[in-house]
Image (cartoon, rainbow, N blue to C red):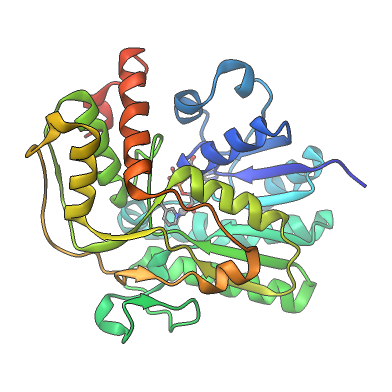
Length: 326
Ligand SMILES: NC(=O)c1ccc[n+]([C@@H]2O[C@H](COP(=O)([O-])OP(=O)(O)OC[C@H]3O[C@@H](n4cnc5c(N)ncnc54)[C@H](O)[C@@H]3O)[C@@H](O)[C@H]2O)c1
């Protein structure tokens, strides 16, 4: 049997960095495929000897041949596909958003087909759902109707359907995971990075205003990363996408958790109480049925961990709060 080797697309991003960190800790081989070359997220959470264990391939997910070649040359046995543009980037450039998020995902399945890899794990999103008014239940179930209100959500829905067709036509199994608001060290871009930026501001002794509020699901990046790895290792028949639940809380509870972790932040972290166009929370019963138990760090612990990590990084001069909290 071939030695376990993960091929992770978009792994210079937040979730990818945490996936890479976990795999290196386990001494599992990992190839990073990313358009970028900026390793600042890896450096924030990993040491130099750990990063030196990783194979980096710079490439564009929209280029079918480049993706196939990179998977072939890596000798990978598992694929985790994260490369994508987030909500604001898709809105600003819908054509590029579709090429990266939709065509890019097709290319990943093409690479699996060409290299004989029989299962793909990929990132979908809560954005496949509509706002709470679309659903009777507070926690939407994984098979509730998909009613995306953004191009990003539409592209993620296309990914979920793409996966189903590759299962039907090629027998490639797929597990899609739908994170909600991922927070933690290295979460520094995308609309929902604001709560993490508030944690960084608190660590730096600065005020911060979060431009939205309401109730949402919050998930620590390390937990989500470990769930992706667990999914990739779980033999699966079919193609389905699963909700990740995390802590379903109002923004006021996020602020309270930050204040608890850093009492000097009291009264300095504010928010607009407008809700995101997504359900209040997601039910993860189906995910647990497939994976068993999943990592689920409590909100208080996750926020305290994040604030402390930022404090240490600030002390080391590793991050510039002005740049990170823009
Ligand atoms: N962070 C969240 O809260 C969240 C929530 C739901 C879903 N997701 C999804 O999870 C995945 C990972 O999220 P993240 O927060 O780590 O994202 P991120 O934006 O931090 O990272 C995305 C990575 O994709 C890479 N990329 C962009 N275009 C590329 C291209 N053409 N070719 C190759 N690589 C390219 C970027 O360089 C970046 O390193 C994404 O697909 C995202 O849509 C994230």
